Length: 117
Image 1 (spheres, one colour):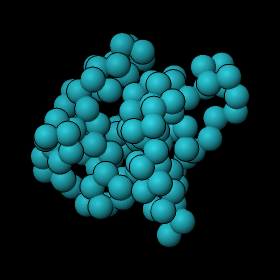
Image 2 (cartoon, one colour):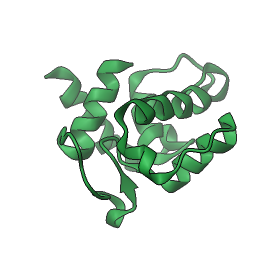
Image 3 (cartoon, rainbow, N blue to C red):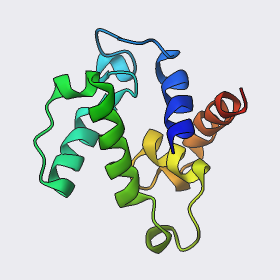
């Protein structure tokens, strides 16, 4: 999972250590992993946590949030088969059903290239 998170950070922010503001989605996603408020609030609901936007800039908290989000939505029960890194990346990019959407295929291709480096 660590390699996948590193690849996602590379795709999202070019690996920039401390992006100081939202980069993607018209400035509405934050930190190295480009976490949206919707994603953060979803994890808060799922886990009973109280992450705030500033927590998205903390790498350890971002990774924790990523693991919980992916752990909740990228499951064998929800996908009906074994989960792959492609599924995880596409869910991260496109939400709970992102693994089904054709619009997340290009994102996966960029993550796959970053994984191969």
